Image (tube, rainbow, N blue to C red; front, side, top):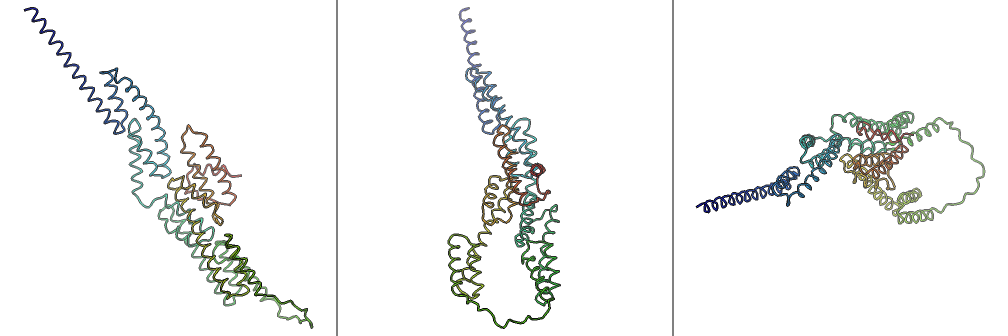
Length: 410
């Protein structure tokens, strides 16, 4: 009887141990599933907790996995600190897309809640048109176009500025363009009617508004001055000498042929400005010469096409800078500066420097070599912008960029 009782007690004990083992296995399997689900969500801290609880039940199988998961959480948390700082900077620079991209990577840890709040702030800013960054880019391009005398481009860009903070500057550009055009038109009318003094005053005023404006006010001012001097000169006609030295006859046909040949050679070499000058020389001798007229129209069309493509590179570069697409900004602005007829080199050098400097600011703190190289290149571009007498609109530029710009001053 005692033997039977002992056997029953032993069997119950074994059954209890078996049930406990099965329960532990079930717990480990459940924790393993929880770890997989957390990993899929990117919640590495929850994955580590689940694996470490499993390690307490099955040390041999899960201890190393627990340690590895804890190390990965520590590494991610350190990376999140850098992403949080970058996201804050991008938000301050109104690079809302960049801020959303970087802050959204912070999926757990003490900074996760703050990061999500900043993401919501960036999304809210993106949903509120018009974009301040787009307005700043348009105003910068308008100022550059106005400075080089391209009023059509300046007016088009200024009309795209809708931000209340920038409207005054955009409207000033449009007003200056209208006053300049009205003044030049009035000067042309006075000159046509023989009022050279009145025309001279109009052209002088237009010159003060914009020396690079269309219609070349400086040249017209000189023309009026010459006509006024001629008008005030005495009308005494000097007596012609009795005999005039024989003058050699000019072979105009040969000269026209030579100019056309020169124009053809220049055009073939891609020297469009040289070709245009040669065609003009031919037309000065024979204004109806068909080959010269057709060639001039062809060359002007090609020059305008090239200039339009070049100006598009500048526009793309500035817009990409304000959109924080610095790689594309560098490429577009460098292409513009490599063009043969870049009229706004100062602006291009400045924004290329700002793009390079922004990359340096956002660079990995542990990669000081590349960041230092970017800063050095940025300073070189700033100096070139100063040599071109470029003056940025400070209200459109980040204080950090302006601080570096100030360092380039001689």
